[in-house]
Length: 164
Ligand code: CO
Image (cartoon, rainbow, N blue to C red; front, side):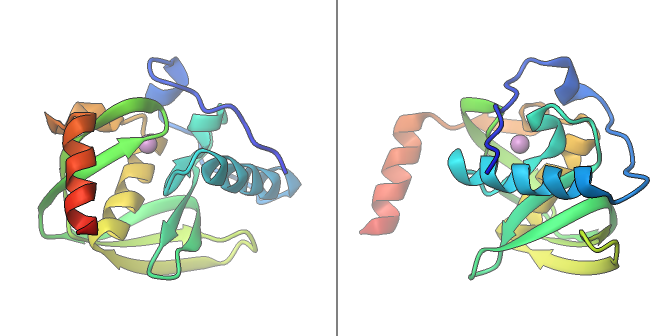
């Protein structure tokens, strides 16, 4: 277990383009495990390496109904389609939530921890989470894409409505 401190905005490392991983070694495996432990501890659905102060192109997201962990090393976006506005948050912005427009579909290519190249497609919130994390690797933060800030009161009333 290695829960890391999450780097909060503003911080230079969050706005820099991260470096490609050139070799998948013990350090990268440890980084993936640290990202997972940190994401779970702080209740995120995704996290990128710069958020734990490592400027490398590595990120993870929870995906699908079973919330499986997608590990992305050097991800690239192959295709996007559609447009949808939905609410996002970010572990680096503890009290900021708001509406962001993103594609509804994404196809990416990335490496897994065994060094295998894979392709994966995602839609809806999974696509949103993947694109949010890949943005982090390019130093792009969701506050730059916010079209409307959503207050905590609004969020709470939305969740209450969903539960009813
Ligand atoms: Co984020």
